[in-house]
Length: 319
Image 1 (cartoon, one colour):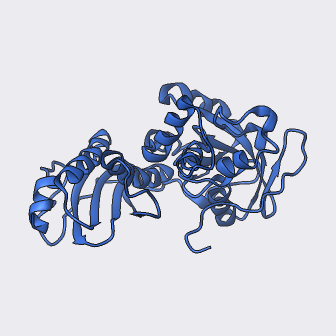
Image 2 (tube, one colour):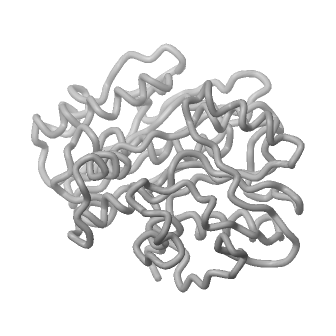
């Protein structure tokens, strides 16, 4: 199978919201009036971001999901994507399953695949995603203000706990294991939440490298500090409350584990009721975990008010 047969068979589909899609030297797009274009690129490398024997259907989902999470953090509506693949070999069954997982999520969010590239090499998956956001309405990392509440969506640490199980650092009971591995391999980007927060939140970021590491980007960009209550963080049921302040695994997964793809955002106190009202229609827990204060850095406190010392913050490819 040639490179062009591969593209035509698995990754070429008709488009309806694109002037020109797959098949030429470049795609042609028309951004809607009154909208700004939001663009993000993410790369998943085999052996670094995922195991090489990961189910290809789930991998197709995750390849797009991690990019969707970036648009969610900006409050953008996803529209288009490009996909570049480096493949050791072109296996029909693998490509069929991968493309099915990719397009199932793309269809759920109205995304059209408009181009990309393929080559032979170590397994490497790269997506550039594009979306639209009303002019001046994009959520940014730089908008946090002193006095803001800090919120997170969903549950933290389940993906990292699933990875710990796969790495044989812990043995999880069946129900918890299924939930945590699904969180790792098939994350659900919070696109609807991001759009709902456009006129509510002051700042936002998606949690990909760990809560502390990603929240630090908000703090640094906004020139503020944070106080966070560890006992308020939404955690896996696997972590017993009696062990919250001493369990190293729990702290590592919840604070530094990464791969959550939840949103961390800040908003004024006056918006508390409006934010909580979003939880039911979105079927998504929203938890207030702390507040923005003046100064630098993040101070993590236990339920009794004592400061918890954390040595690491999150994942860094070059640390």
